[in-house]
Image (tube, rainbow, N blue to C red; front, side, top):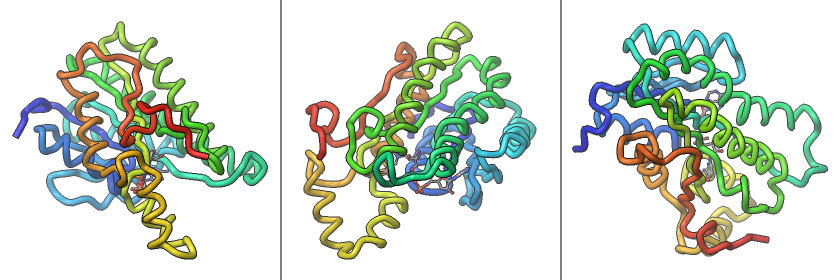
Length: 249
Ligand code: NAD
């Protein structure tokens, strides 16, 4: 077992499911004490759950203060909570645009704002945002979601520039299609879930879905000392979509 995060405290938003849960487990396995901030905060020991809605500033401030009270410090923040949206630019009403941006983008600002005073005191401070290949790939039928993740990518670079002189590194992961409860929900709603799953696999360059554990390993790399000179980048974990310059249509 690696001990890269021994003595450090990590906050993972949306850490009760999917990518966030895998990242929380990986950071814990590597020695961190991990606080999961989620609207559904039930998690198994050794993770600790804190009820938190990233769309509610007071909820975020209370949860982050609760983590600091409980563990005495915050060294790593994984801004992972996010939701999807389907359709073209014409398919979502204004309220839906604002709802998705409020969660996927402003949520990162709220959690980061609350955690910054603690991160500034850490000698090993890092923020990892969960972005998506949707930020750059031009995915069909994902206009709103892609715009929100494009904003996450831009925000990651801007935050990296603003905080590197304070010793806080900021980077993001760009997952492709990851086998999580989110994807399970989408498949379950399809007319032919098995056919859709096979088609989804076939569309991936490496012929399968990305695993949450593969994304978690990338998150832990960007959060830890092995990436100490890596700042303001996006790390694709997508089976080759970005690296091979593939553009799904
Ligand atoms: P998931 O639905 O399995 O997990 C999301 C978690 O976020 C859940 O535990 C949920 O309770 C929590 N959450 C939702 N709204 C919240 C809120 N307002 N405040 C706090 N927590 C909230 O999803 P996932 O597939 O693990 O996705 C996690 C992240 O990864 C998202 O940002 C998503 O955009 C991104 N992502 C997912 C995929 C994929 O294919 N699954 C691909 C690229 C990027």
